[in-house]
Length: 217
Image (cartoon, rainbow, N blue to C red):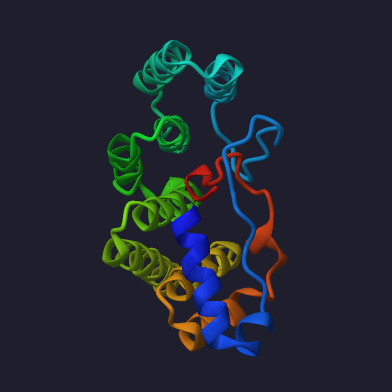
């Protein structure tokens, strides 16, 4: 986070008033206090197991508690047939790995989410947000940009195929993600154009998923 913050500070100094004219999306994290307001239907048992695992890991914050939490999540993932539930479990696993500094495992879990079907589109966007943040933290700037681009391309393809409808919030979040990546890279004008495209939808910054990118905190 310190690396991202330093880059944003330098971009703000270079961009001057251009940066102050728009606001950044807030940091997102996996929280057990969001009442699992997912915005889509998924297995309630899976959500209970996810919340239990997150609570277990963070209660003691020890290697053992995190290992036990991962075992719970692995069991949960193996019993799920719903792709949205599988995606949420993988996102939770990634969150816990990143909290222990294991970025490699965290990235691997997020990459698996991208292979899920369109029924889990909201989870895939959340995973893209987290994945881009992890790439930035681990000095893989090119991958962070590619992740943001792929997220935008995915939503554009879906919009063209099904004629849009219902994906405006996700498109706004994808644009905000691309804007943040561009800003971290020092491309202030490009970042501003993406942020301006995402400001109009209040859902862009809402809590439509319980899985938020702790990797960027």
